[in-house]
Image 1: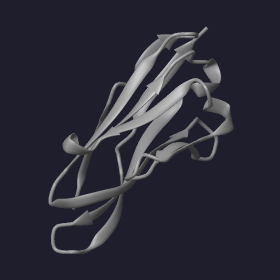
Image 2: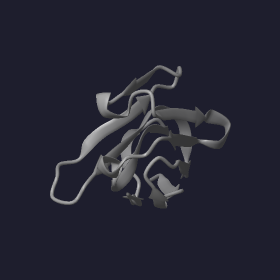
Image 3: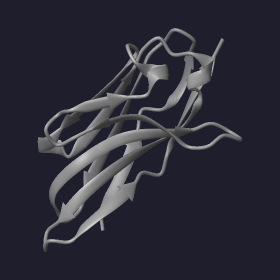
Image 4: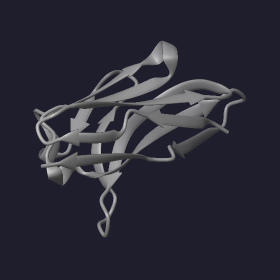
Amino acid sequence: QVQLVESGGGLVQAGGSLRLSCAASGSIFSINNMGWYRQAPGKQRELVATITSGGFTNYADSVKGRFTISRDNAKNTVYLQMNSLKPDDMAVYYCYVAVTYVGGSWGQNWGQGTQVTVSS
């Protein structure tokens, strides 16, 4: 299976910025879609942003213009640059990676989550 290591979360003031990263490792042949989801306490997990292997991106309306998703295929890493953070952005952020393994099988993988806390 694939191991996903998330980093970059933390405490930031409203209006500040954070950059999340998620690095995939293991017997990976290729990575298709990558993305970020988040879940606030007492709420459902929601999509934040996705990016295809070709670089096509999609964002939740709530983060458009503030967040940017990108990927470094050579490093098997997806990033989420978060600017102009708001208290509503406070949540646990999970990365998502769909991969084709060496050997031909395919699977979906989730990161362990990283906490983003936004103070007023």
